[in-house]
Length: 330
Image (cartoon, rainbow, N blue to C red):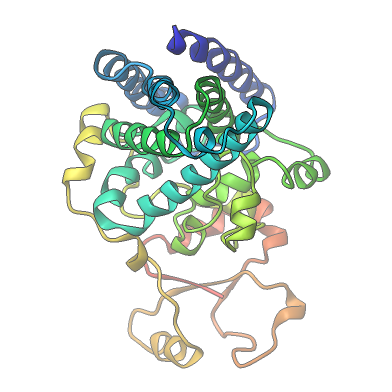
């Protein structure tokens, strides 16, 4: 019963966002839906079947167990229902923020989570693209938090509905007016905000972890307002997986060797950059500063490709020139 209650709001939000994407897309995706959706939706269907067959409504059962046994913080302090429900949703949302950071911090967890980041486009289906191992780990984690907190059963269900809806929304490839986006960012994670998290640049991937509200990113200093290359120049996915993967390969991804996320990008000093530029095969230097910003130790770099963030939407074709060489962003 609980799973059906969750399904219909999810289906409604998903249908709305997919329609919105078709009518007003934010970006032209590098791969067509026909190349990505079979994997993303196949993974979603597999997860739904596995969860239904193995654990069912685990969040609801955990909350019911806590209520029957009268265990958990909210039961011990006899918190009124009107307080327990919103408090539970907020605590669970923060717990998911912590979980997300853990999946980025530990190599074994990252191996599983990279399935989500290996998508070369970000749209409504990306919000559903998780490896079954991550789904079950997340369910177990949430069950422990629900029992420790003593969350009411319907608060647990409401949170699951909210999580599914916001995950689909903030992964959607929809265009919002800039002023509306900036206003929404104070209490809701927007698509432009979360898309930064799917950048190939590690410094951006390690930002904007929240799914529902942006407060945890702001409080924990993981909030990033804009990507270095702008929303239209942002490269999506993982730098070591640049081809669409079928469902079978995606399921095997956690068991394959891949470069650790933190070693994909590294900072170099101005002196190191000058030495690299003197080599036989110098890196491709992409200078995204505006003309008024050529100050400091580097100044103007001879041979650098000037591509200010403000011009990215007009000159995206220039980004392809450096794909065969190491890229240095200034």
